Every structure is written in C-alpha cells, then in structure tokens.
Figure 1 (cartoon, one colour):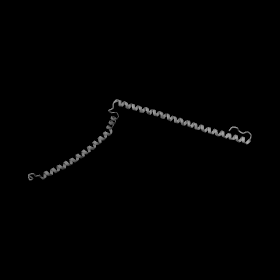
Figure 2 (figure 1 turned 180 degrees about the vertical axis):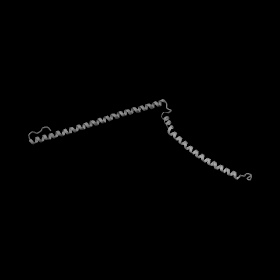
Figure 3 (figure 1 turned 135 degrees about the horizontal axis):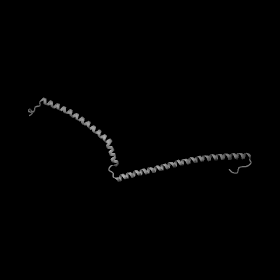
Figure 4 (figure 1 turned 90 degrees about the vertical axis):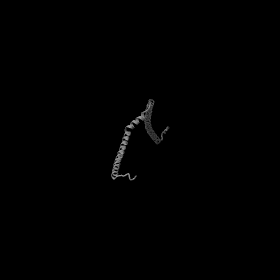
Length: 144
C-alpha cells in the first residue's frame, strides 16, 4: 500500500506555500480581530460614560416609580426646606440674641467702669475732707 501513494515534490511544495500563505492570512485576521475588539471596548466605554450613565441615572432617580412615591419625595423635600428655614430662623434669632447680649454686656461694663471711677473720685474727696478736718482739729465728720 505504501507504494501506491506517491507524493510529488511539486505537490508538497505547493501545499507548504499554501500553508504559509494561510498562516500569514490567519495572523493578519487575528490582528484585525484584536483591533476590532479594542475599538468595540472603546465604543462601549464611551457609550457607558456618556449616554448610558445619564439614562441610567434618570431611570434610578425617577424611573419605575408611581405617583405616590414621587409625591412622598416632594413631601420629603418640602419637609427638608421647612426644617432648614426653621433652623435658619433659630440661628438668626440666636445670633441676634448673642449680639444683643454682647451689647448689653458692653453697656454694663462701661457703666460699671464709670461707677468705679465715680466711687474712686468720691473716696478721694472724702479722704481730702478728712485730711482737711484733721488738720484743723475742729469738727470731725460724723458720716463715713
């Protein structure tokens, strides 16, 4: 049987040449496939980053919700605004109270300082009167 099959050199050579051509073609196709995969990944990434993210966010925030949920969200937003306004009002009143308290404290401190100065002046006058009276030895002051 072995004798019946004969392969000629030209046939073998042509098969080898076809194999080399097909391998080169296969390599070029593999490179094209890799390049197309990279382009597809880039397109997917661009689409995900731009349009899909916006659509997904809109869907998450508002999609597939009935009116009751949206009304509840509006009520929650109104409550938040209400409490923020109330907080701001209390903060303003507290700030006003602190400013008023500070003004009264400053007024009290100035008044106290003036009274201390007046008391000091009165004490000096009393001492001076006592010295003058002691010098003369005539009449002593009865009130101190």
